[in-house]
Image (cartoon, rainbow, N blue to C red; front, side):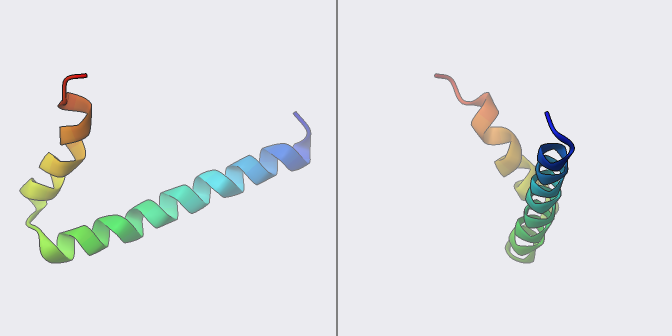
Length: 48
């Protein structure tokens, strides 16, 4: 992997991190913290 590719992947990871924080703040404006955590944990707990 070249240095440019590595830097692009780091930038992409930082963008996902930032957009995740924005989404979390939006959810917390409408739900209490316990419900928000429940929503985040629900999809992995669902059976296939």
